[in-house]
Image (cartoon, rainbow, N blue to C red; front, side, top):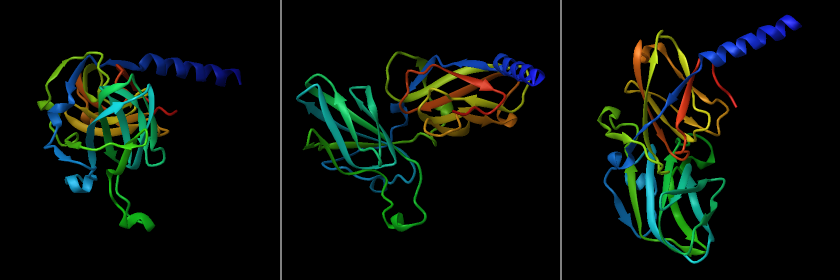
Length: 255
């Protein structure tokens, strides 16, 4: 029994030593992947914006009368992060459509970044396959109107063409870049603990997505996508934009 415990401790220490920290010190503005905006009095689902999968930014001006008002969305497909004047207020989904907006009374820019995770291909809801935001959005019971809807070309935009700068403390979604060195090329797991929802590219190749709700907290990066020496990683993050580091692990990471 003692030998097994000692062996377990040795393995744990070894794994800790082998974990390599990656520091993201550059950021690219999301405006670089904006597609043509559509303006309308009412919300339009992604289908009407010619977006089959991916992300759309819905934004409108709002006026608050108190320090806390309920924002309620009629339909959210599938997941959204809510910002007011660039500050994260929280997240909503089709199972949780109400959120408290906490501001001083005044006029603000409401921005709702929505991701369509996938299409329904079976069951009774197959005929209702609308994605994005649709129906009404109300603030303190009053309908929010006059929307600008901007499809975001996240996955198809060449990451090599993104223009990065030294990152600031801004909370809004964007792309983050870092470099890391490897002495030996082999499979690694990218530990994304603490990050919220996003996409990852390594050496300009797309390697996967992540979501904080999932049990697994790592992405496999195969040796074919890695280089001996310097490597580059780019991450798009939707909500936890204060995060600055990830780690490479030799084993998968779970909650």
